[in-house]
Length: 222
Image 1 (cartoon, rainbow, N blue to C red):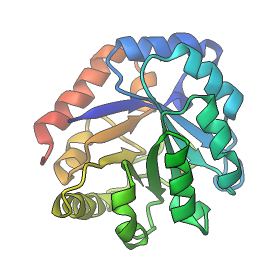
Image 2: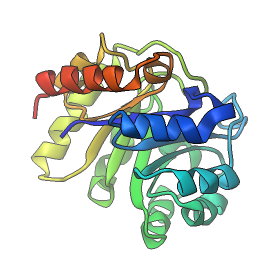
Image 3: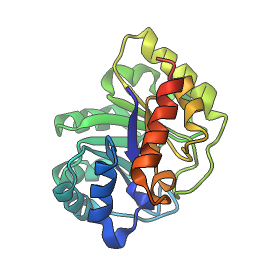
């Protein structure tokens, strides 16, 4: 059940292809790609051309997280670049349902992300349309931030909603995930974890990914 998605935001971009191959060999389930526009979030990262280059190297699915506004004009480009899953922010569009349907039509898995202070009620009616929900456990924009502990009750609530409706949705937590706190998020019901600096700051990627997965599996509430 537990999936680990290293975020390349914390990778060494001078050796990006090598870094992707290394975390895949170390046991990564997804390659998480943070796309930031300097407008929706206070940072600027990569565009479709880099995603296309990553797609040529990566063997694992590309878990694309779009932190851009407006988001609708770029969905087709990122799908063509090789995204397997596209997650967009509820805060970044006025027409969320339409954007989600477009992602599905493009042949990608459909995801929604919520910033820490955004209530779950904003997506309560949309859950049947989704393959994943990403709960931000930091304020998005930069890697290396600390996990916000008040997200744990939010994770528990969403997990219960998913179970009550009998849905198969990945509950992904993004931000500040480390070996010493992943168990708490898994116990609350999260099953997919984005880890950037926790992985790429270590010399031995395989060991830290194993530690993350083991801690989460032992704590996961099911």
